[in-house]
Amino acid sequence: MNIPSPAVLVPVSFEDQRLHIAVAAYLARYQGVSRVHVESDLRSFIDWCRHRDLEPLRAQRPHLEFYLRWMQETQRYKPSTVSRRFSVLVGFYRTCVMDEVLQHSPAEFVRRPRVPAESPTLGLSHLQFEALLTAARESPNPNDFALVTMLGLLGLRIFEASGADIEDLSEVHGHRVLRVRGKGGKVVLAPLPPAVARATTDRAGGPILRSRTGHRMDRHCATRRLHALATAAGLTVARMHPHMLRHTFVTTMLDAGVDLRDVQIAARHADPRTTMRYDRARKNLDRHPNYILAAYMASGT
Image (cartoon, rainbow, N blue to C red; front, top):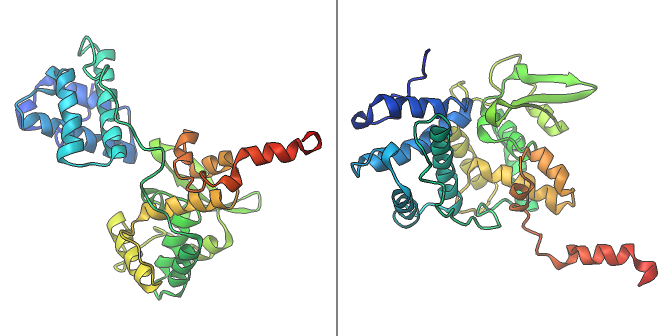
């Protein structure tokens, strides 16, 4: 049996067969970008163990508690980052138990860090997003408008947008659509608003988003372009990055009154609570369900 080699992941001091197989077996459950991210999070823990002369397969609950404190107090990671990285560890040790590498998981009784109910990422306001769209449309670089529309009007993740090719565009039942490869290898068809369709039809093939050199745009290039566009649009934002536009995609739809379930489907969130974290207006008393109920029961009140 050919086992995927996690050589890049396992430090030299831990190259024993049990850890090698355990890591490979866990990573084999993922594919594409998801596997890359999980591998990165697992590497962080293994490196942490290496610097403390601790074998990951011999870690106990107190060690994981110390790892959580290290992420929170030394590295000062955001709660969402700490929760995500620890979830990877929970999955890794659960797989080890399933494969009978370990008898029980040391992560089983570790208290998970609390993630704030609201997303810490700040999306653009409606007027800010319009200004960014205008700056992108007027930019001499046609990739700028395609970048902003794919992130802000389609709500794509940056790896989905940068991985899209002209060949992924097609017509389905009269709709211009983009075939999007999302998390976990899932493929969905995203209908293109007219502005997005215009921004993606200037070539016959190759990547939709390209750098100035003609190569496929990556997240670093995208971040640089968004910084330049924000400056051109006169926006004063602390840290412009691609996910800010996906955040804007969700918050703008919620602000416009689109049903939460429809926004969840459009954003491709597996859990509606993820979508709710983006709802910056949910504390607005004008939108309180009490008023909707009172209006519905007006005849009796």
